[in-house]
Image 1 (tube, rainbow, N blue to C red):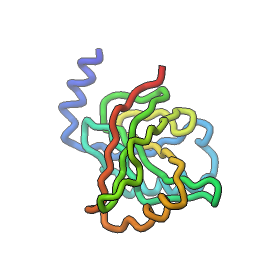
Image 2: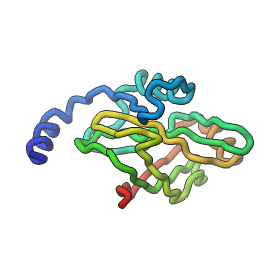
Image 3: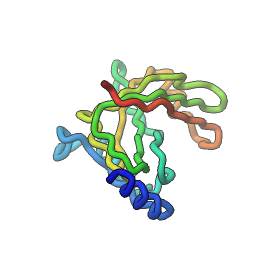
Length: 156
């Protein structure tokens, strides 16, 4: 059955399905400015990502207060698999040759970000320092930014 699903998806993978933004069940009907901004961003950019790949994207949003600063990242699933349990991955982000995140382990929690079906995107807030936030806010030339993530693993 899995083989059939993969063959079907490969035959349609050249056509990009529009992305859908997902919320964790606990946030489904809650008013939340960050999640609403995230949903709006995904609706305005429904073709992010490459077919067959899972990737992480930084739209430029940071939020929080003096003690608890966060950068908002999206994880986008363009694979044929569903991510329905907690996992982690390693994130690297540099701007103009300067590392902002170097081999940072990021946890993906279904209870916080939602189940990630094919052609969906979810928000992942990542704790940052004031210095990181200042550098991230100064990122205005995407050609100078280099981001990668690797080693996505499901938790035991």
